[in-house]
Image (cartoon, rainbow over all chains, first blue to last red; front, top):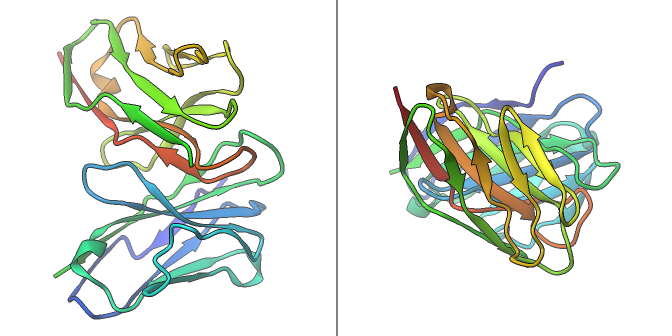
Length: 115
Length: 114
């Protein structure tokens, strides 16, 4: 079974530029999550999708971050404009989404450096 | 929302030593509790979980018991190996239960020396 795929793996941009990350979850997984992991900290949930609907985006900085999951499969996370403090690893995870206490499967992450 | 506090590292041990990584949580109700591990160069993966009080999760020689009295979920292993070197994260649902996003601790970097 293929795992969660993310691209690109690394990205370097200057502040005020825009950037987009892509995630392809495990086939059949209805729930998709985006996390931000700043160096030395645990992942922080940004947004959760159930199929193509948003379940929770309370921790997403909506003035600069946006995310979509068209057709309930792939998802993109965009930052526009980027700030220095956005330097982090962006993790995508997915789960089946049909019962409690499910395992979340994480992708390798996209490491973003904002200069 | 829910929160978790875990001991910070790095924790350096010799091979075959006993390991404890402390984790305490604050939550509404009795959510499921998780330990995730991140090996060098790899993505986060579930190590073990417990879904209700007094449950013991176990995997790869690691164990953790859900203690509601002390709101703790400490990770233990009787004899660590060099291959256990990784970053370990304690986690629980961000809010409520179900297939929720997770709130993670800051992570504990474990280094096992031969």
